[in-house]
Amino acid sequence: MTLTSPPYDNLRVYNGYVFPFKDIAQELFRITKDGGVVIWVSADATINKSETGTSFKQALYFKEIGFNLHDTMIFQKTNPIPQIYRKRYNNVFEYMFVFSKGEVKTHNPIKIQCLHGGLELNGTTYKNYSKGVQKREKLAQPVQKEKIKGNIWEYVVGKKAEDQEAKGHPAPFPCALARDHILSWTNKGDIVLDPMCGSGTTCKSAYQFERQYIGIDISEEYCELARKRIQVCEV
Ligand SMILES: C[S@@+](CC[C@H](N)C(=O)[O-])C[C@H]1O[C@@H](n2cnc3c(N)ncnc32)[C@H](O)[C@@H]1O
Image (cartoon, rainbow, N blue to C red; front, side, top):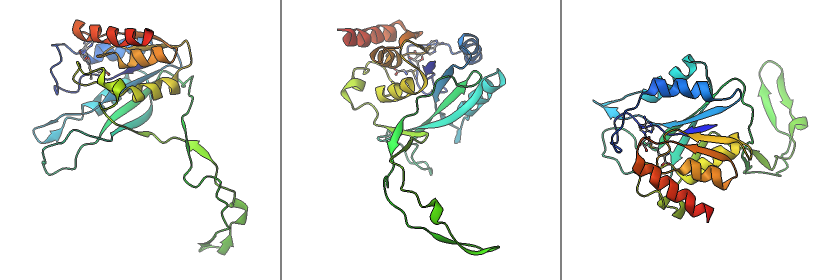
């Protein structure tokens, strides 16, 4: 599995980089095993009054080179950065595209409690205009206790202690986001790659949950920050 977040358009200047998107995507296809997934966390800049649409273009390119677009998930921010009002609603999310090479091999779905779990429902009546009024008593089962989580995941950004460790980096994603993807799409011992690992959030979470990890970043400074974060876990 690859979990990564590329530089978004030219929103931030990290420590100076080149970003050959197509080469990176093709290499990800080459090294992903059949059944493996790439989670691509991205968003668009707004330039000249229009969103660039780069995330969509990238997603379609991943499809063009052979990946399935398995799921378009949303990373919703509980505490988005305050924005200047420009006649649009505050942007509160990023995409988390899940690309798969063939059919997904591992999925350990996260479950959540049903709001009305255990509730005994009465039979409901409804109108079917072709057949008159019908009773649906057979369908009136108690509501199940748990269900599979939806594909909009909400996280607090940058406030938790585990996320504050990444302060030397301008755009880390939350450890909880990394954890949820790693637990969902891999098993213990699997290899997790982040080819643009920044402060090492993916690597740290992979290590904590007994996965193997490979982290790459073009900036030596961020690699050093990532090494430090992982070393803290190892102690
Ligand atoms: C959005 S940040 C990733 C943050 C990371 N997910 C974290 O939690 O800290 C993008 C990273 O991509 C790195 N980067 C940019 N171009 C790169 C390239 N061509 N190869 C490797 N890393 C690159 C930047 O240095 C930056 O750290």
